[in-house]
Amino acid sequence: MTPRIETLNEKKLVGKRMTMSYADYRIGQLWGSFMPRRKEITNNVDNDLISLVVYKPTHFADFKPTNEFERWATVEVASFDNVPNEMETYTLPTGLYAVFLYKGTSTDISSFYQNIFTVWIPNSAYALDDRAHFEVLGEKYKNNDPSSEEEIWIPIKAK
Image (tube, rainbow, N blue to C red; front, side, top):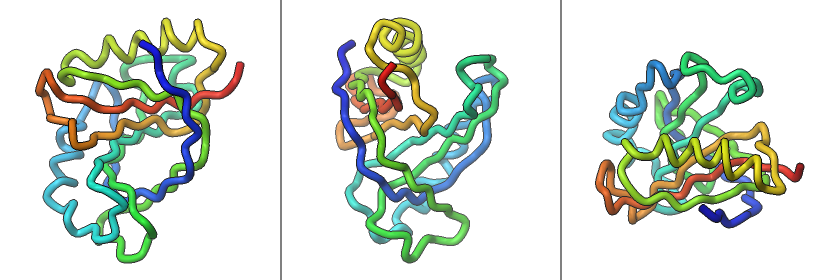
């Protein structure tokens, strides 16, 4: 589990969001409402999907499965011109990220995340930063397929 450390340039995202918790995880409902309308977004930068999470600053310090957060289903766009009805914009600011490559099904991903937060971050030269977390679901992403690949972007700062 060795991530690459990358400075992300600002990204403009368009998509849909829902408030949820890990105890009431409705990501399927969110993506189910977004994907049929994805083609209405006409100024995509690429074909990647971006699954974004905005946590409250205290989310991890006082972690409970019932803590609520915002989950977004998005794509990156060149500009915020022509945003489809019932979709919203999100600007992902420039910042430092640890980027992990995950291979496998979504059912196995929770232990991967747990390892990032309980092993990698505490033993690294970095601390978790209070910015959005996200996954890039690119051309190698195949929902619930053992050969699926995605990038997990964790916001970090120097300790």
